[in-house]
Image (cartoon, rainbow, N blue to C red; front, side, top):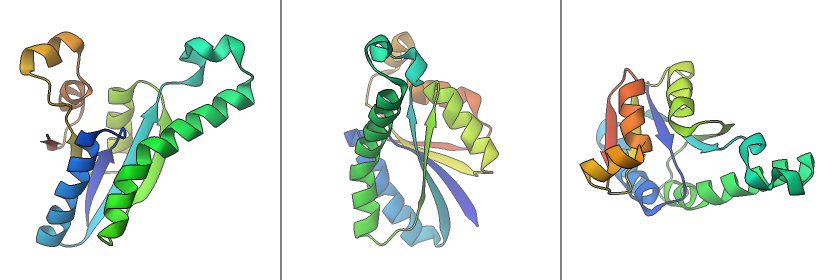
Length: 141
């Protein structure tokens, strides 16, 4: 079965990628979709000095759930099955690590629509993922 890594961040780009996946599933058939949200490690947050460890963990979990909510709703409404994963770390390297660990054949992710120069200057996650993974990457605008 074809395995798709589907990193999401709660953006319009992620929602558009979810809609793309619906059509892809209908065209290709059975897919195993791994929806991934990556949060910065709580230890790296500026607010860590003001919050207890359990409060940081709760905050990270809430951020992840919020980021996953809209794309989950889109895939649920279409009857598309998926598995969710929540990880902490640097976003692009975590996406690449999880893509390899889960044996994914492809990455499908939303793009924020920045131009090539702006993406290079800002170090876009999509650009980094393209360089870190050894599988095809589909960017959906």
